Length: 75
Image 1: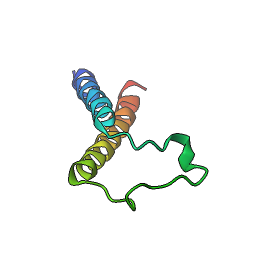
Image 2: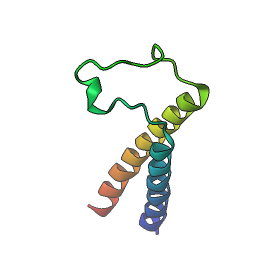
Image 3: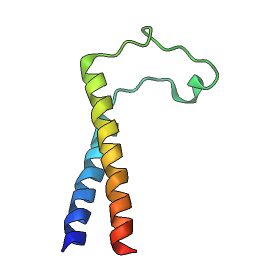
Image 4: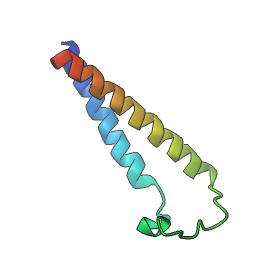
């Protein structure tokens, strides 16, 4: 029962993480940032971009935690 509940939570977090990543604005940097690409407007981000970054970070952390919990429950 606990396994099923955590699997459902894990699935919801995974879908949320995909949506949060897809909602992030394109920065146009790509791999050019490795070679010293420009940062655009001096690295300023709008409030919504900053919020999306925090949500993405939180969802990624929750995804990792639920992955580890599922590993311990199954194994």
